[in-house]
Structure formats: C-alpha cells, structure tokens
Length: 343
Length: 148
Figure 1 (cartoon, each protein chain N blue to C red):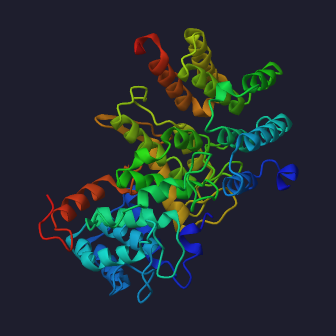
Figure 2 (figure 1 turned 30 degrees about the vertical axis):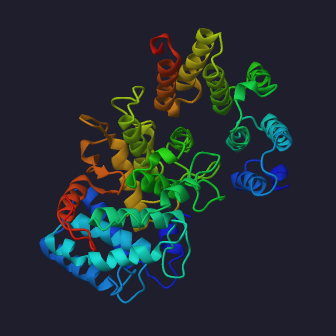
Figure 3 (figure 1 turned 135 degrees about the vertical axis):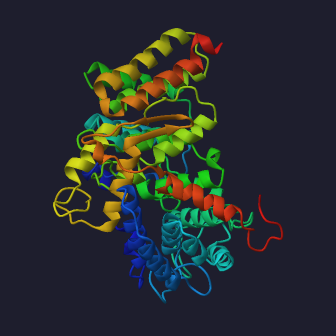
C-alpha cells in the first residue's frame, strides 16, 4: 500500500511521479529551482503529455490519471508561463471525460481499474487548470460518499476497508466538488484522529496496522480540510490555534524516526529512502508546523527554527503561492468548449 | 472464522460488515447477533479498536442509549477498571444519544459526557487531547444552557 502511487501502473515507470515528488520536496525545503532547470523539467513533462490528452508516466506512455495529477501539480509548482503553457487544456478535458464512468467514478487509465484516487486526481487536475464541466463530475460525489465505511474513513472502492490514502482522496475530492456535506464528517474526523499512534506519534493507514511516515500527510492532511469545512459551517467549538491532532508528536516521529542518514526520508526505521516517502513525510511535517484558519495562524516548529518548512495548500498538496498563482492564471482562461471566458 | 483467531484483523471485521450489508442486511435479528458477537470480542480485548468500530457500525441506525443493556455493558467494563479510550469514547456517544433524545436528566448527563472528554484529554488519550477538548466544547454548545 505504501507504494500505491507506483505499484499498479503497469508499464509506466513513474518518472513524472518522481518529478512531482522531488519538486514538491524541494519547495518544502525552501530550495529554489533555477530558471534553466525549471525550463528543462517543463520540456520533459511536455514530452510526457499524450496527443489524446492527459500525461503518461514517461515519454510515449499511455495517459494515466496518477501521472496526470502529478504533472499538473509539478507544472503549477514550477509556476512559470512555460510550465503553464505545457498543458493542453482542451485535450486534458477530453481525457478526463473519457476516464469518467457512467456511475461518476473514474478509471485510472483506459481499460484500467476504478478507484477513489481516480476521482481525486481528476478533480484536482480539472480544478487547477479550470477545465471542469458540470457533466464531468455528475454522480461522482455520490459515488465517493458510497466509499465511506462504517469506520468513518474512505476505502478505495465501496465495501473495502477504510484507508488513509483513499480517505484523503475521497474527502479532498468532495471538498473540491463542494459536496462535503454528503459524507459523515464527524465519523471521518473520529476515524482520522484515531489513526495517530500514541506511542510512535506518527499515523497508521488503517486500524490496527503499522505506522508509516507517508501517512503524516494522507491522514494528518485531512484535518486542515475538515477544520476549514467545519469553520465555514459556523462550528464555534473549533480551536483557534491548533489542528485536532498532536502536532508535536507527529513532528517528533518524522524528525527522529523518518530521516535517512544519507538524506531523504522513510516509512519507518529500517526502511529504504525513496522520493515518495520524502515528499509525503515532509508534507505532513509542514502541516504539523503550521496552523491557519482564516486570519488566524500559529506556528509550532519543533527543534531548530531551520526545521521550518514552507506552507502547503492541504487540498492539492502544492505550495500555497503555487496554488494561488495557478488559480489566478487558469481562471483567466475560458473553459475549453465554452464560449465565454470564466470570471 | 478468521476473527476468532485474530480479533485485531481489521480487514476481517470490514469483510464481515460488507458481507452482511450485501446479504441479510442489518435486520433486528442480525443486529442483535452482531452486537453480542462484538461485545464478546470486546470483553476479550477491551482496547481493540476494530471491535468497537464494528459495534458502532452495527448500531449506526439505532439510538445507542435505547439499545437494551448497552450502557450496562459499558459501565460493567468501566467499573472493572477498564479505561480504554475506545470504551470511554463509546460511553460519550451513548451520553450524546441520550442528550439528543431530550433526556430529562440533561444537565447531569452533559456533565458526565464533558468530564469524560476532559479525562480523555488529560489522562487516558492524551495524544488526542485537541480532539477531546473540541468534543467537550461541541457537546456543551449543543446541549448546554447557553444553547436554550
């Protein structure tokens, strides 16, 4: 499960995924990508774009929703005009519509599996690039809601076990679609907070399973989203300076247990480092360090002040500024297939 | 069957739920049977979250407080020095159910519920302190005298 982004991509080697993980990790660490590097990456991503729309894992590979999501994120992280211009919005829109199933779910690639990641990847790609149509996600919110289990988290498909990665995708997609009220938010909140391990401080993916650094984001990252939703619903019981998980304990787990001696981060002590875990442990660390709600904000940085990472937009897991800039750019462009530019 | 050998296997609990939902559904008879099963499993391992989550799932369509013997089951464990956060959290849900139904002993039940949230936050489930404090405030806002 902890290699879910890679494991079932078939022939896809996942270059794009590594690209987005590395770029995002560099952003979190406050590293600058040079103009020249940014241009080279944008050109590479362009070669991964399929003529029929969407992105494959590497040049010449068939388009797939996971690398499509990763490519859009990576290009928004680069944030240059060249990067934005890589995306063929019209064919992307066609690809997303093609992946859509009659029941509102999304298959990951043509003839591929359907699971909740598909809806999230499609929703993020569509919203960030402003190619969404009303029909694209018709029924999707209801399908996602059908993936919430009796435990409160979401599973990959209806009937399966509640799981961190899928849970983040499910709730994230509902929020993007504006349909979060369709699910039991209290149940999701209870399940999510119970995934933090009282001994390790990190999060597990499922009830009674082991801790894993990547869930620092998939689980803890849901809590800012829930906080925002409840806040907008007028919940007066919400805290004003902390998320509803132990931010200090999560930071301890990441800093003490998840750092590889050679650099990079890991699942748990004894495991090998990889870019996926590096990206998601750092993303979770960023969430744990920064509380923001409306005009309220509070930093809680464990250890040396240099440990402070940059902030993320918890719904997309790209930089805050990257998300805002992308939104500003793409909403100034008309939705493909419509006559009027969107306001 | 797997659950008898490995009662912490959450996938097996989930599978049990899925099978029932897709076959008999949770009729009153099935609900009774599954409640008894869960309670037996809880007695064997009172801190096993899987069993508590399943019990909550089985009774999702019911008012927890009006299910025969539920509070007694909880109180018996509590009186036997079981302070599992899952037990205490479940008792808070039973109190919430009582308050939701408009129980006349409202102030006393609210006090028990909020005190239990605070004891979880301070002693029994400290890692989830912020969540339990939120729950305490939520209950007080919903059912407290200020809400009238």
